[in-house]
Image (cartoon, rainbow, N blue to C red; front, side, top):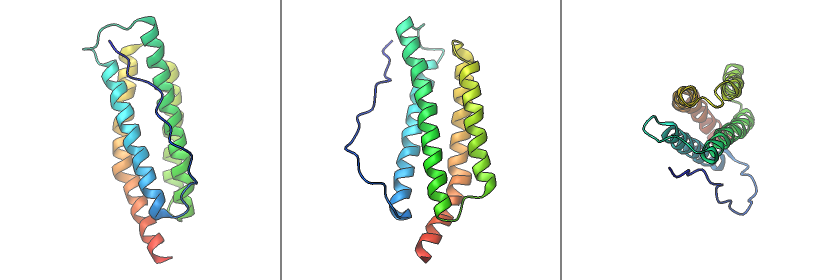
Length: 150
């Protein structure tokens, strides 16, 4: 089994966008990247995949930790930019924190248990998709409206 989890190619650093019209597409690209990475991890954890070697198991564990790291960074950036647009309610902020806390806990509890890790990744995928198309979509729409008024 080939492990596809390699370090992403990094682009040259650019200054962070200062306006919502430029921030929203970056956040959406991050959403897309997180979804793709999550799908790759789900594929690797599939029962149809053969048993892993020790190196593959370690790479997959690192991949799960990387997913959590990337998710945390994305949610921090999203909170910062939505707050700046005046459209991040305390409930949305709380949902982000709860998702990270739950993901950290699940990552530790499922380490070394491929079936449990698959169940966690499926639950995370469900949360992420529902959150992206629910609370995030609403907040992004409000941010778009707020940005056009300014």
